[in-house]
Amino acid sequence: MAEPGALRAYWALLRGQARSQTSYRLSFGIDLVSNVGATALDVFTVFVLFGVTSELGGLDLREALVVTGLTACAFATGDMLVGNIERITLYVRTGRFDAVLVRPLGALPQLVLLDLPLHKLSRAGFGTAVYVVALAAADIAWTPARVLLAIVAPAAAVVFFGAVFVVTASVAFWWTESGEFGNAFTYGGRDFTSYPISVYSGWFRNAFAYGLGFAFVSYYPALALLGRPDPIGLPGWVGWVAPLVALPATALAALVWRLGVRHYTSTGS
Amino acid sequence: MTVIAAHGLRKEFTVRVKAGRLRRARRVVPAVDGVDLSIQRGEMVGYIGPNGAGKSTTLKMLTGVLTPTAGEVSVCGLSPVRQRTRLARRIGVVFGQRTQLWWDLPLGDSYDLLRHIYRVPAAEHAARLRRCRSLLDLDEFLDTPVRQLSLGQRMRGELTAALLHGPEVLFLDEPTIGLDVVSKQAVRGFLADLGAGGDVTLMLTTHDLADIEKLCRRLLVIDHGRVVHDGTIEALHARYGSRRRVVVELEEPLAVPPEVPGATLVTVGQARLEYDLTSATAGELLARLAGLALRDVSIVEPDIEDVVARLYTGVPVTDAP
Image (cartoon, rainbow over all chains, first blue to last red; front, side, top):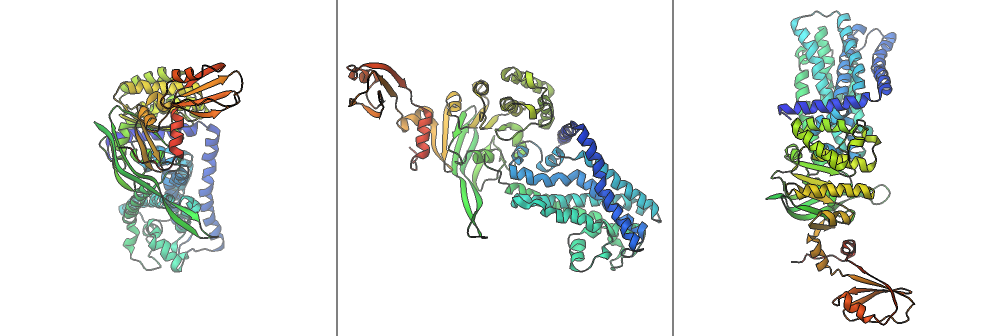
């Protein structure tokens, strides 16, 4: 995968996918538009919540929007880039994964590129716009470090969400009928990170925020950007650890994926 | 030079079977149960067996798709699973039931993409494609989206896709399944041509034994995950005592069919007798029947299909030395 020529090969896969999808022009256009909907709805929910309360988990509307925007931007991008890996269930169940494995390319990048949902570009774009607007509206005392964080945090979150997608999708290698199981962690993770974690409590918060690490890629970076202390009491540097959480998540995802491929059993004939 | 080598190759699958209302019991089923293979460069080998014998599973282990449960395997000197991508560049694979082509794109576009994926120099790619186009008559549907191709057209397209990077070994899983006679002949003719060069090693599974008779000198028969025959088709006939059959049509029905030494009477119809020749020649048999009013006589050569059918249904066959 590290060979230089491989990039051209992956580029060819991407072109093939782009051409395939745009061969159905009308449906591609409709997908492009309708995909904004889901993310728009997530953001709208936050406005609705602030219609009944003026503060959410210690943050006001403009501050909370930074959390929501960061998540919307990162999740939509991660979902576009890697999210379609959940189609692995289909590939495994039908044995189409065979055809992927006989090509001289990594299986994971192939799957991602073979099905890259280009129509989700609109959604990623919308998420990014929400993030940028939220940053502009939130009264942030900008320093060079915060500018860097504003870029690194969503990037790390994209990687983190990507890793979550890969791990949950890999379950299909062991459990063919895994179906919607992964969604609890992918879309569930998105919904969790869309709000300040201080609105949650108990074991649920601890499991998702700290156990699985979702808090470190959205809520804490947002606090650091806003210059707010953590109401739960974690030190300020926690807002900067997103890349350190994303990296081991990626390593774990790579490992689980690899084990999964070895465990692949194909189908008859 | 040995291109494909396997020793004690084994693959087990775990299946869950119903055991009571909610309980499910796990059972381990060996799909491939200790296969030894050694295939030399340039050989064309037919790999046959009944459904579920382990043909496809073997092929998938040789191509790096499945990880063997046990045993050693090497193809082109590489370990298929560990060195999968390196091996993929040197082998061509056609799984009859799976496609390597881009469903929504014109056939020609798939070839263009494959050239980049396999990183084949443009001139080499063009030369190979030209050859396939003329031998497999691709021109009339090269611009048609793959989803609109007929099965025969698609299979010709798949074969081409598997060959454009100049593979040393070609694995074909049911390459003629579902094809009409004309397409079958086109595919067989093309493969025979390919094998004649002596550089490409070919291993194919099939249910159509005519594929084997036309293409393969060597035949591997697998049953219940084990190789039960490895040798030429002639050797298979010799081993299982295939016999020529003489079919005699009579002018009038016969009450008592004549016994002929050196031949076994297998079926007796209204006015029809069938003898299998054990030691007698067809001439000797006919001389014995000369007194009858014969309407027609035909001689049926041993059919590999019969031999294999006997092989499949027979009690466990022990490998001859």
